[in-house]
Length: 64
Image 1 (cartoon, helix red, strand yellow):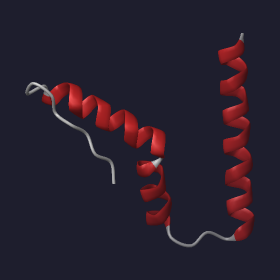
Image 2 (cartoon, rainbow, N blue to C red; image 1 turned 90 degrees about the vertical axis):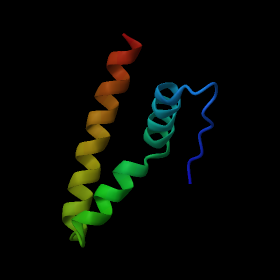
Image 3 (cartoon, helix red, strand yellow; image 1 turned 45 degrees about the vertical axis):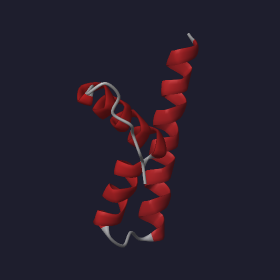
């Protein structure tokens, strides 16, 4: 469970911090994967490969 402290009544800053922490933890991604239900092993493999390619391209862009 993600906890964020609101300091000096700054709710907007706390909300931004909470969103960043949730993105870093992969919480929303995990929820979406669970909603999809059962995935055949071949489909799961293809999806993982596609995501790996996307991530490698993203890393490559950040280095250049």
